[in-house]
Length: 112
Length: 115
Image 1 (cartoon, rainbow over the protein chains, first blue to last red):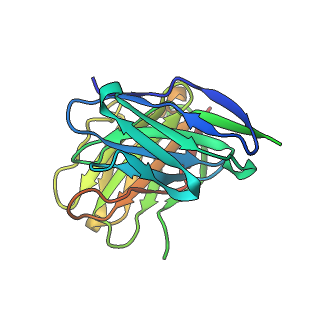
Image 2 (image 1 turned 120 degrees about the vertical axis):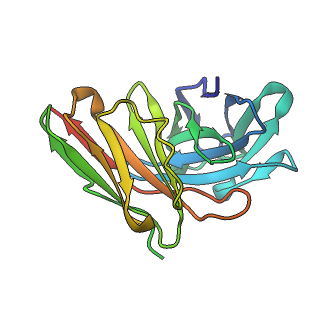
Image 3 (image 1 turned 90 degrees about the horizontal axis):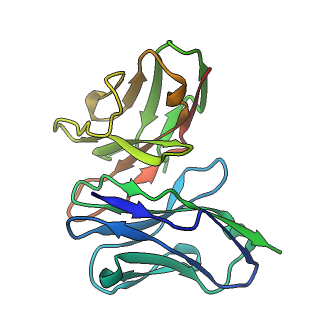
């Protein structure tokens, strides 16, 4: 079955600290992988995506993610978190039709 | 340019009533998607339109849900005889067609509350 698992429902980090959000997927074909961010009352915004090639992808707002096929993972990282990064983060997988399967999300809180 | 817009932003209805939710995609985008975001279920795919092809309805949860896309642009999601479990945020996304993958752009959503 196709699925995405985000094991961390809620994470709190201090401003300036590093961040890693975990994502594991199950997908029968070559996956397209995505991270989206949703701020309160806002729609989903694409942070970054992976299709092929270099397994370390750079996105907006200083985020990056690494695709590890052997671990079926696509973890999101940021070296130094800003208070404005507080939001909910969703990992998603898709295929040729680009119909997305989302994880349940990780809610990030940033402490001053 | 203008993004994906959805209306209404909020809808409160009584159980058993029908509702219509509207999505205006980005001009020129040929692919349109509906998703539902609810507590306990996360974000779920509902339906996908691509050009003039038959829509992929595989995510619709019951026959009370239907959607259409007129003229390859505006889409309406209709829920008949609403139930309390239909309460959720309904998100629409559109995508420019082309080779490979193009980003899906999401609208702000319609929050549906069924009393």
